[in-house]
Structure formats: structure tokens, C-alpha cells
Amino acid sequence: MASALAWPMEQVTDLYPSLKEVQPSLVEVSAVLQPMTVPADTVLFSENAACQGFPLVIEGEIKVSRSSGDGRSLELYRVVPGELCLVSSASLFRAQPLSAFGITTKTSTFLLIRPDLFKQWIDTPAFRNDVLGLFAERMSDLTALVDAVAFHKLDRRLAAALLGRGQQLALTHQALADELGTVREMVTRLLHRFERDGWVTLGREQITIVNSAALRAMVSSNLN
Image 1 (cartoon, helix red, strand yellow):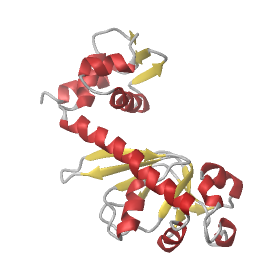
Image 2 (cartoon, rainbow, N blue to C red; image 1 turned 45 degrees about the vertical axis):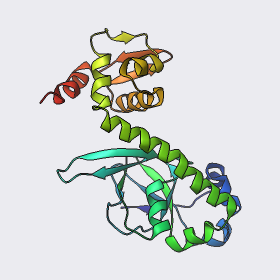
Image 3 (cartoon, helix red, strand yellow; image 1 turned 180 degrees about the vertical axis):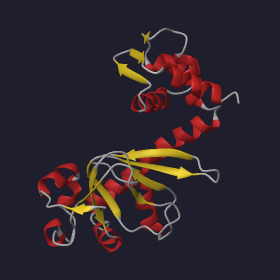
Image 4 (cartoon, helix red, strand yellow; image 1 turned 135 degrees about the vertical axis):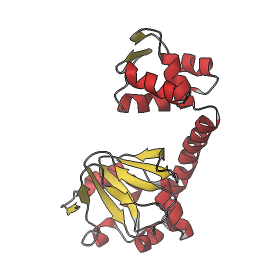
């Protein structure tokens, strides 16, 4: 269960500078806007549910994913301190149900901006620009993700490209992208996912294979 904590306003405005300009101000809403701390694997919002508010992450991380009818899920992006949630903002803008679900990957602290307050704050140019800028950034990420899904399971192709070269690979992300016929940003995104899963560690122009069995299992799953 979430627990409420006292919160230092400076920490929040350092992460989200545009909140210094919103009206009503943080001082005015501080009595009703308190941070909540939840453990890892807490579902913060559910797909097709009404949006209960706009999360501002102070500590931790939220993974945002879409689910399929067969029980699988596809990660869209992650929200870390100082970043904003595209799915929540889109839902509040359009007054429609959420198009994805969000779950914490670690103990996380966040402010949940209720919908009516979000609509007031969006009239502040600095905050509105942050939210609209988020759409542009996330759209680039999501376009790359669609490309990865459409172009023959790039994650499996990348796993195959890493195998058979020994444990230490002196390779740049650009070299792997050229080999796979994709863009460096997509390879970097997938390599960081592999690193979070504990399959590889990343260094400067170097990739260390930590769990080759997991990489082989991913490649094999493409053949079944």
C-alpha cells in the first residue's frame, strides 16, 4: 500500500523546473498534494481504466507497457525522475481511458497530479511546453519501437549478433546497427534493456556477455 511522506519542494522543482511557474502554485496545493511511496511491482495505472492523475516521479522508475490478448506485454518506455508520462497526459488531454499500464520496477516515490489540477497547470506555458515536448520525444521512441517489432524481431537478431564472438566484444553500437541494418538509437535502447535484464554489461566501445544462455534462449524462441 502507498504511504504518504513529507516532501521537500526544492527536490520536486529541481526535477521539474516548470513547476516553479504553475498556477495554482506548489505552495498553494502542498496541503493536498503529497508524495506517495510504493514498493516495486506496484501497478500504478491499468490499461483501459480512467486516468486518476498525472504521475511526477521523484525517486524510482515506472515501466509503461501495453498488454496483448494472450497475456504478453510490450514495454513502451520508462519514466524516471524528471521525466513525464505520455500515456497519462494523452488520456487526460482526450478524456479517454488509458492506452497502457504502468508498474514500478523498484521502490518509487511520486506525486500524483489530479486531473483537474493538471488541466489548470497546462495553461502555464512552461509546463505546457514540457508536456508537448514529451510528445515529440516519446513519439520518436515509439516509432523506433514499432520499427523493431515490424522488422523481424530486432531484439532476437541483436542477441544472435552478440553470440559467437566470445565474452568480451569490442564493438560500437553503430557497428552493430550497421550490421543489423537499423539505427544506432534502436540498438542502444535494446542493449540497455539487455543490461537491465542482467544479460550484458556495457562499457565504452565494449560489450561483456554476462548471460549467454539467456541470449541463446531469445534466439531459439524465434525458431519455435
